[in-house]
Length: 251
Ligand code: PEP
Image (cartoon, rainbow, N blue to C red; front, top):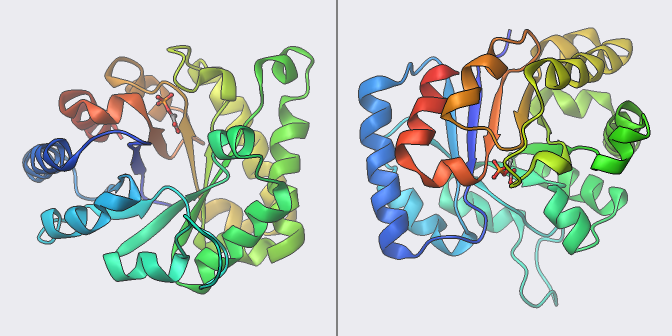
C-alpha cells in the first residue's frame, strides 16, 4: 500500500524572505512532529527552486515543481524544461492543474506530453483531474474525471501510472473555501481506483490518489480517514505553517 503524500502548491506566491521563512518553519515542524513514514513535498514558484533546494538540503521533504514544458530546449520563450528541474533536486511535478487547463488552455494531449516528459526525466507527475460545479450538478463528475485520466493513458499507457500520483481536485473546491465532503471525495477516489483496477490491479493498489480543494487543518483528518484518500494537494493552507503542519500530521 502507498505511503501518504501531502503536497504544498504555493502557486505564484511568496518572495525570497517569505519562502525561506516558510521552508525553515516547515522543516523544523516536520522534524519534530510529523511521522516521517509519510511523504511531504513542497512546490514553490520555479524561481525559488534553488533556494528551496538549499533550505531543504538536510531534510526528508521532497521538492516539486508546478509546471514545465515537454521539450528539452528551444525557442519557447518564458518556459522551463523538465530536464532543468532535475538540477534543483525536484522529485515531483504538478501536471494538468485546473488553473493550467483553464487559464492557459492546456489540452489533454499537451498534458499527456508533459506527463511523458516528466517521467522521461525521472520526475513523478502529479496528474490533477476534476470537474466544474456545472459538470457535477449535471451528473458528469465521473465521466469528466475518468476521461481526463483516460486521455493520458491513451498516450502513455496504464503502466506509466506505476510512477505517478493522481490528484482529484474538484474545480469548485479550489481556492473557494468549499471542500468536497469526505464522502463526496471518497466516492470519486474509489471510482478512479476501480477504473484503474480494470486495467492494472497492481497499479491501482499502489498509486497514491490524493485530494485537493480547500484542504485545511479542520477538515484534513476526516478526509484522510477515507479508505481511498491517500493524502492531499494543498494550496492556500500550505502558506500557513501551522495549518500545513497540522495537515501533514493528520496524513
Ligand atoms: C490547489 O491549488 O491545488 C488547491 C487545492 O488549492 P486550495 O487548497 O487553495 O483550494
